[in-house]
Image 1 (spheres, rainbow, N blue to C red):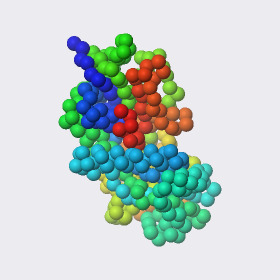
Image 2: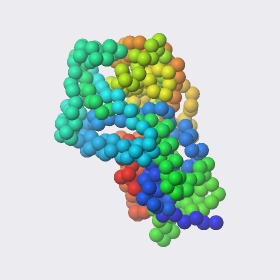
Image 3: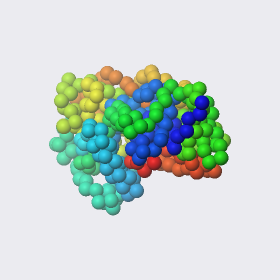
Image 4: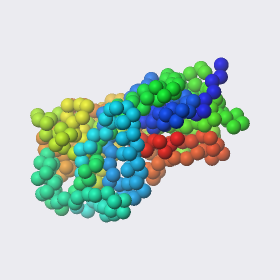
Length: 347
């Protein structure tokens, strides 16, 4: 039997579930297809927290982030539940940082976003959990905080269903083919047709593109975050401890206590290159070693040994910018990657 829809969304992680929600909210007859169970942990949309911020290196990204805050507020109002938690955020630039602070201050000034520049003494006075080397410069932006993927994925998915979306999980794609002005998708033993297809499969992107004879130079890495124990986790509560990013190469970032009993720290793009099939869920102790053994980094003074590791996948373009476009020769097939998008723009 064939089923017809206005739109089909492939992949129901962060981007896919949001696209499904906005389409259903616009009264579209929409189908969401997920190859695994809903809420699985094999991709890049799981765990308790992701950084959300206005401090970016170009005015365009700052403006995009502004729209993301507005969009999340709409979703929160519709769901009657908080998804964004503002903690304030520190971008910490060590002496001779590989990442220039001027890109960030210039972009936020252009976009009209207020910020503060702090010395290491002032930073440690306000947040005594840090130990910063002399010569460090800290950029503080009050709107920074965290978004909860566990809530931020689940609520759009549930609201999409409430708006009338059809959802099929455990339905791996076996074929995609254009038929005149429509797209036919075979998944989970069923055949579906749609006028528009949205691809949001993350690390499985090239699997989907192969049906169109296309391939993108995407790198998939297995990333890892580490939750640390602490004798006094109140020191790292969201009310007392901000999100932070160590702006150098390598780059590190961290969170207050949220979802687990301790602060979270990770290296950005510090993982090994893998495939969606070869990745492991086992802890990589070498991956965690830099932020355990380098005291000159701004690691919290009161953090104790690690008590939990979590893995996820990054799907990276060569320049790490978004891919947001229709496929060449297929204007009714659109591809989207990278989570922190105002996802109403996708539809």
